[in-house]
Image (tube, rainbow, N blue to C red; front, side):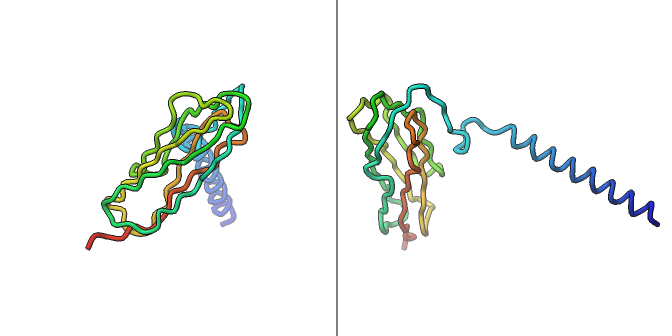
Length: 149
């Protein structure tokens, strides 16, 4: 009887080890374009000041497009290069500046949220990767989308 219990424990141990190894293998094959992997390293860093990082659009009706420009200023001494801006959902499309933003100048990240098929509370986030240190804060677009009547 004891041998049977020992075999069960040994088998469970091997299964647990196999499970943990397989989880680690899956995590090591991360998508380089995912929001979690946007930590880009730059040698010439600068600083940024967000003039607005949260936009509450209040209430709107399903089917409308919410548009907002998030404004920022390059407060550093080097040009600010934005390598990407990614939204948490395909219904939200950010548009980043293509050219570097010179020290002292302001720039915009334009965001359009298509509310079609998204009734209810909305909380959309945009992650910006750049040569700013500290990094851009997460940009937030939020409000309530009322369903069509």
